[in-house]
Length: 437
Image (cartoon, rainbow, N blue to C red; front, side, top):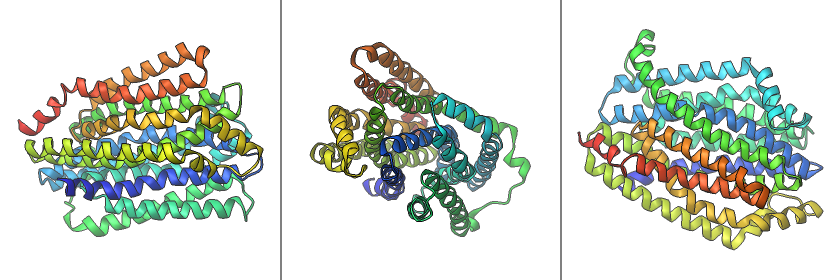
């Protein structure tokens, strides 16, 4: 079972870790573009807007992977083929809709996030990457369901290397600044779509079943797809709301240095979350597979081993943050008064980055199990309660403890997600019964 978990988890970890690395490189570049505090803040707001858009589209990946994994476990090639077609079609429609509506979406987002002209320039450049990014969600969700983590890993490495190289080239030699980071994303994402589609066809073309478009848009199947996705959309809106509010609340603090500090600290947490998500994706793929195969014994063993790996990753990251947090923060800003101020401020809140991995490791794994089991209602309800607690804690405590209230609310929100899912699933008995009935 450990081999099965690692076979899926390790490529996903490599894929996932390239995403925060790309974000870290972007933040580093912003920190070396003139006024580092202002530029890092503008990039943080711009990235937060796109995170909101992408996370709200992640229902396509989650809804696709669970159904595909169960069909794979049952040996149903027709359903796996139909799910690829549905995921691609829905991804294309959603991505193009956002591109067409870019002006009202951009104006609303920038206003709500208290963004400036620098943020607007970044948004209207990067928005052309959205259709490609959403298509990658659909393709990667299908590949996860097919138990294949290698193709997404290869593509993620290529995409992020291209993004980093183009960001450095566009920002400095070409003098495009923060807009260059945005256009680098456009180039990298579209190349990623082409590569993923080509490799997927080469790897799975012979196993595809001939289908008609009326089967793809079959009313009953689409109702099931969107019923699962409806709950995931609500759940994802809560995730987006929590993260976006974190950046917005940071931007509204009296001291503008707080936004830069919180952005950098959140990047450190993101490193942990993407690493842990590798095992969550393994739990997602294997849970769906064992439910489809009606193998309850393997499912129980899979859950226990995934939880074990989750603890291992948590211990590694906590040790890293305790021992080298100053060195890690020093990578983000150029030496000078700004750097000293940012690191001094960060020292006041670094304890939260040490606590959060302990609070968040279990919830990430529970998410993966629920996605694989297509228990989207439990995911939705648990997230609604956790988000309510997040806002209640912040608005109650912020007048008393300031930025610490934001970190306390965020940490509690992470922890409660897992607690609520565990008890709402009757201590996972709801999931186990799916494989045993």
